[in-house]
Image 1: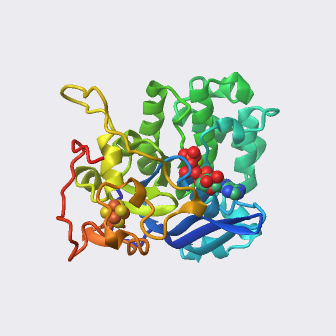
Image 2: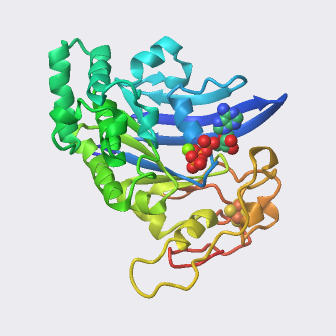
Length: 345
Ligand SMILES: Nc1ncnc2c1ncn2[C@@H]1O[C@H](COP(=O)(O)OP(=O)(O)OP(=O)(O)O)[C@@H](O)[C@H]1O
Ligand code: SF4
Ligand SMILES: [Mg+2]
């Protein structure tokens, strides 16, 4: 858990909106997203494919360079607004203060250099180290990430490593300058379950060994449950629900969260023949309904869901917020306490 929940958050994102322009049309991808990450906290950002998880991460890292992109809102990190930084200022921060790891480590490594050379270069770009000092640190880092025989592995090219080892090497590179915040975009999706468990364990240990906070992006509620202190559920580019992971899993308040949880196979007891599925698909960004984006798939849709998106986050408990009119005061529907065993859809 985060060491000090009273200190100001490390990252405080407010009203983040990201849109692209295509054929003269503005396509809103991420809408009014607000969240924060405390010191040494692991926040899970979860949502279906296309919900805007990677776009959110790339916007925070200043890595979207598509023509016609528009990013607004604020993202305060250690007192400065990331969204207001120049390219040069952002480059100085990336790697040193905020690092990102990707689903496919091949995208982070250049195939023509050894992984050791690439981690050495990253270290030397941000710290005043000789080649020899950089290599010593690279070997240390690879060893800390559980890479066997790190001195020899450092001399291998990315394609000569297994997927799990490449992922460890990428985390080593991301951590080489001891960043305060690590953004991990689906870091385990391509890995088998055993290696996935090892990488998640590594993530959990980063906060104690490196003091880092982590924004962990995934579409897997199981990964969130195992790894994250808090959870933010994204639906069609908008926040649906956020809260402490234990609380949100025990008492999901948004029908979408409840449905996601209901579709996880139970750990104990008999397995149902069929797990409940959420009917339909998320709307395309340009086809989002005027009201709640989940309304076409929600069992509880009623008149007040339709005119406008639900007000940003009615508080339903300390730090547990939901963008749904269902649990709000004066709602015609009864307040429900969902459990993960309740197949709501
Ligand atoms: N450069 C771009 N130009 C136009 N649309 C884009 C661009 N990049 C992403 N999008 C759109 O933004 C939406 C969100 O994409 P994003 O990659 O963030 O989804 P995601 O939640 O990360 O999904 P996944 O789980 O599949 O990785 C998608 O509809 C995608 O097509
Ligand atoms: S606002 Fe309405 S449609 Fe949307 S999730 Fe809540 S009950 Fe369902
Ligand atoms: Mg993605």
